[in-house]
Length: 123
Ligand code: HEC
Image 1 (spheres, helix red, strand yellow):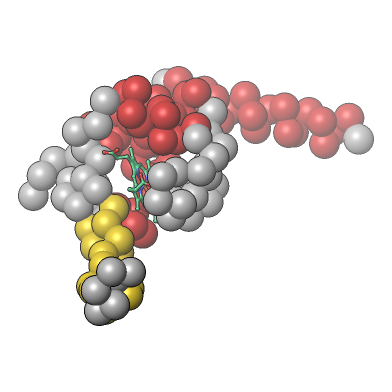
Image 2 (image 1 turned 45 degrees about the vertical axis):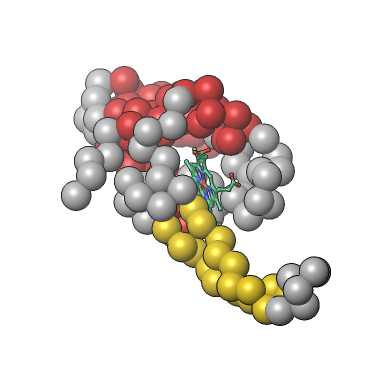
């Protein structure tokens, strides 16, 4: 029992050391979170993050004209958002479109993730 406690404590310590000592950089850590933020990866909808992405197209009947109109669901470019907008989106449990999932990231994780998306280069 003691050993298990010790091992888990030690690996937590080791992991925090790895991040602090920049074995992996903040950018790499952010990139990791972007792909796997304990939930649906940002990359699946936002792709590289530097341009808007059409994630779905559908047809909807217009209430007035009764005609079918093409609609699109767009994941916007996110490499230019302010930290306020980012934080607001990442901490709200329902986004306006109800498409983006809810995430539960720590402050440090959010900072690294934001650092990453701000440094995505437009190709
Ligand atoms: C299932 C698709 C999907 C996933 C996965 C997703 N997003 Fe989004 N995201 C959207 C859509 C759609 C919008 C625009 C509508 C809205 O605000 O809900 C959006 C909006 C945003 C915005 C606001 C942009 C603006 O200009 O207001 C930010 C920032 C953002 N996403 C970041 C992220 C990050 C970071 C992740 C991963 C942790 C992520 N998203 C995962 C679909 C997704």
